[in-house]
Length: 85
Image 1 (tube, helix red, strand yellow):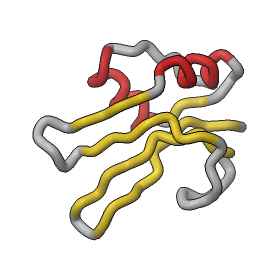
Image 2: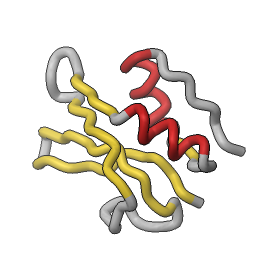
Image 3: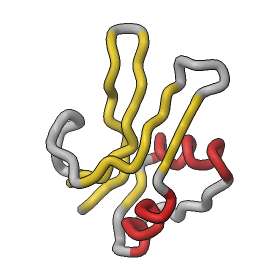
């Protein structure tokens, strides 16, 4: 199953994340299908950027969304994401 999730980047104690689309069975550092944006929680306030058109396209094709990405998207622009079951 294809999943939209966070991929940790950065250094020790200064993390930032990429919002990526990848196979849900793969490890966190594995090859990604597409990078949709980034999330940097170390800044005050946290910064985030997402390619909304690509996000909608992946969601319409059946991609699942991780809980962490759901929380990030809620704070970003109140983007509504349904959880896949």
